Image 1 (cartoon, rainbow, N blue to C red):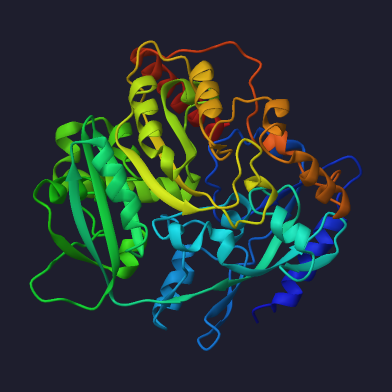
Image 2 (image 1 turned 135 degrees about the vertical axis):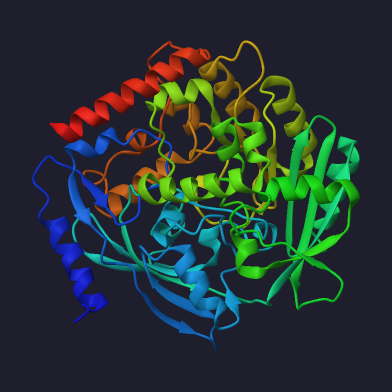
Length: 476
């Protein structure tokens, strides 16, 4: 018999209370995490298994909410709610993301200019505290925990259940693709689209090549092409945008597939990692890489086989958040100082986010519509010095994202975020000594002075070294 949620919750409480003195808690889960950070801190922690918490407890079509356990994935949730004609308002782009992971680590998508970041769509959160006690946090109860837990990266408690709001959904998303060669015109139309469309995103494909995609839910419309975004071998979404934007026009994407349209190509990182230009432009090559990417994410999340420090010297995996008025300035900054393409432009309403990690001291955040400029790829600027470049980037932006590398010091972050309020919540909810400090979860300013890109021949040798060590570990 499947255990009830109450029984699974009690098991988590028991594990938390069994924590040995002097050891901190870490989560053991069914799905691999999607953090790019070094997970070495877990080795000396007391594991708490949450693998059983993967059930959808109910969907209320009248209230338009779903009650789910923390390890439910977006894929599970979207399939179940779409069958009832609804979807979550904000669906970050990978089926393997979990509800608890998105609450702890935020999450945005092309609807975020209307609904905010993922935690804005949550009505209440059940949390097991470091003491083993359970509280249900909402805007009306334990509001300080409810507003601080998002963006805290699992340092305040164990999310075991959440109530997620839903919105009505139609079978398709109808998208229009436009290409701009002038940055001011692109930024102007980007801003106008936010008032007119349910989904808005942009891709900077190359210098003077800006694609704007505006979309809305739709019933089937005669005469429009259908793009199967999740079909193996089909052009990856950014390739599809590149092609359609050249001629303009519209098409239909099945709604579920639209939500995860960037998944097959891992945005565009699959093509960059494969580095086989002819291969990724062919259906058979893409189909092979689609299967390999799915397998890798299922087994290891976004973890690279290279040591984290080496990977950061080769690739940028970073989000930068600027006010929408600074979109053009932000694009120009990346083009000049990093030379990474494509760039993702995703708008998000953050002015009414009531959480410590959005109370930016740099500027008044209370009425700001922002844009996340996603920088995922290989920097082409020479010479590239990763620590210097990321520190300069995080000084330039309005809101440094801590999902990627964070090369600021804690003191510098305290000038931007209200870390004192975060520490008060940690103390009030028994998290200060129970959970790993945020400094160990997020990479603050590194002590090493190593910088610069790694020669390709060295990367090949590292790969062979890793394979040899892996074989030894299996045989030993």
